[in-house]
Image 1 (cartoon, one colour):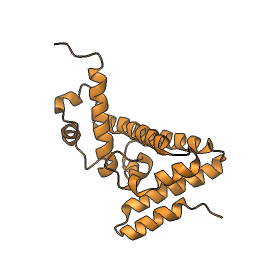
Image 2 (cartoon, rainbow, N blue to C red):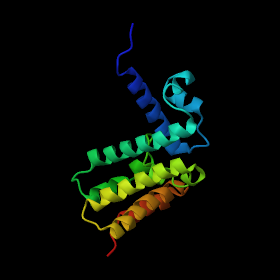
Image 3 (cartoon, helix red, strand yellow):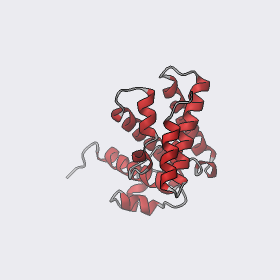
Length: 178
C-alpha cells in the first residue's frame, strides 16, 4: 500500500510538535532524539528522514512552538486586543501548560547556550513578537517594554518554587502601569 502524499509532512509535524513540547519544558540538553521520537510514537530512524541533527530539530521546533503559542493566543483571546493577549500570555494556564509554551519565555536561559543559527532563529521570533505587539498601536519602545514584561514575567513565574508568589507575579505583570 502506498503512503498518502501528506504522510511525510504529517510525520514531520508530529515530530516537531513533540520536540516543541519537550524542548520548551526541558531545554536542549535534557531532551534526546530518542525522547522526541518516543513522545511522537515513532522510530528513531524516522528522525533522519526529516532532520540533519538535533540542533536542526531544535531550531525548527522553536519556530513550531512559536507558531503554536501565537495561534493559540490569537484563537483564545476575546476580544482580540493587547490586554486579552497579555492576560492569556501571563496566565497560570500558559505557565502550567502540558503542550509547547512560548519559546521566548520557556527557553530564555537555554538559548544562550546554543549556536548562532539557533540564536538567530530566537531573535527572529522575538522580532515578530515585537511587530505583533506594535500592531496594537504601540510604538517600538513601548512594544519592547511590554514584551519584556510579558516574557520576563512568564520566565520568572516558571522559575519560582513558591506558587503563591508565582501567581502574584503573573498578576502584577498583567497590570498596566499608571
